Each structure stands twice: as C-alpha cells, then as structure tokens.
Image (cartoon, rainbow, N blue to C red):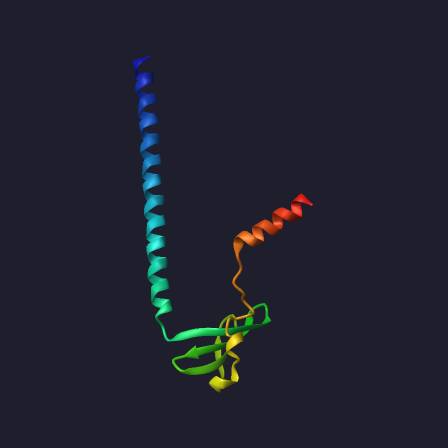
Length: 121
C-alpha cells in the first residue's frame, strides 16, 4: 500500500507542476502580447500616413484615400496587390467626411444590448 500511495502523490505532484508551468506560459504570453500591441500602436500613431476613407468595391477589393505627409493619394487595395491610382487636391475632400464612413466606430456594448433586446421580444 505504501508504493501505491507514493505513486499517487507523484502523479498529483506532476499534475500540479504541469498545471503551474502552463499557467506561467499563459501569463508570459498574455503580457508579451500586450507589450507588443502597445509598442506597435505607439509606432503606428506617430507615422505620417493615415487612411482617410475606404470604399469597398468587392469582397477583397477596396479604394482608399490615404494621406501621406501632406499629399492625398488614391490607391486600389486588392488581395495580392496595392496600386497607385491618382493624387488628389487636398481641398477636394470634405473635412466632415474624413472620419471613414465605410468603417464606422462601433460600440460593442451597444451591439450586445441590441441582441439582448431581440431575444427578449
């Protein structure tokens, strides 16, 4: 009976060790992902490039107006390529429409609430 109890304690200790190692790996992965995301976000916001408007043509083809430094350019974005189309006059774009109406900022809580209301009805 002593040998059986020893094997049981070994199995339990191995399980706890593996579980703790798994939790440590998950924690390291979480913090590394957050750090990399913050690093990339910081570098993207300080660039001289900005997508002002996007217009979807088909499932994988878009037209975009992009501000690069002080120039406005129109590009076609496809699955495997990006093509320069033309340069625009900066006065040609209405400043009120530069919010990218094709891709509005959605509040996830509002969407979740709307699904909850539909289920209750």
